Image 1 (cartoon, rainbow, N blue to C red):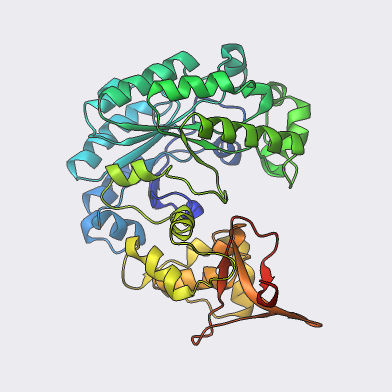
Image 2: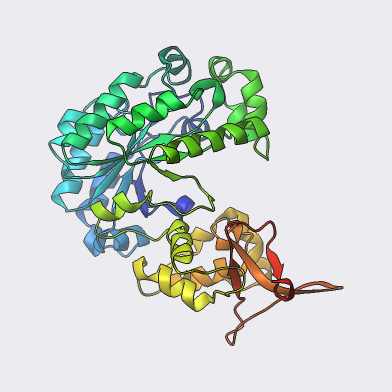
Length: 399
């Protein structure tokens, strides 16, 4: 079903997702397969939705009506053997309705047919090793590494834009990273999305014996830590530096550096959602610093340019981690996106809050009882910008 991409609000500029069946690529580290191994697409329901989406009042339908694109797929590869037969007619319907699509894939079956259906799109292709023997262990049902580079070349020649996910970036799989970055640079891809491997306890418990063996116990012991292991942090930083030095646009969730990674998304799709990376870039470009406070009005005016107007049922963006908010504050289920941004501005416990980024900290005054926020005339806190803050607060008397 086409759903709102709640889980990557202000992270990914594509606000809708379409996930399909359990993915037969069977990547050992796949969070989606581990979370829901019995995943099935209800294709008739999807088609009924699309046949009447212009008359529906759900948030997903309204975003489609306004021309926002759909990512296919965050959770399952649309070109896996378990999905491509359904993917092709769905793409025909989406294209006929004028609904733009972005792809996340490792390649697979039906792509030649898909390219006859869709116009220029952004393709996110995952490649985290050049070693085919490793690929066969960790991604047993996925296409060969060489075929993914062939796919990138084919896409670029046809006018599509491509970014590569070195996701997860694992030293046992990807090191030395220089040859991989060189191949990516030469393929015509514009950027790389780099993340470390992380599996929660439930995901680890759902691993089969074969999957555990493919990942290996030493790597699993690192991947399930709450804080990323120093070995993986060091390799992650090496990947990012090597990619940037090669001229690729680099992105990782929570990165404090400026980046043009999402420029290709904005060049292809007329409408996208804002991401925090946009605002970080804006702050660098306009000289914000530790002594120049940012108001919420400035933040919401910038981010709101790409968000829908009007009141919507959008409290789901706050996620399960913010349930405590309802106990202390009255959080409306129906609100404007500006109100939603205001909640994020004031409550850094929500993962989409800009204050979760090391670039931002509250302007405060410290006394014996703790921190006192410095607020503007609307009672909204002032925020300071820097390439790096270690804490949520900065004493403005020391700046």
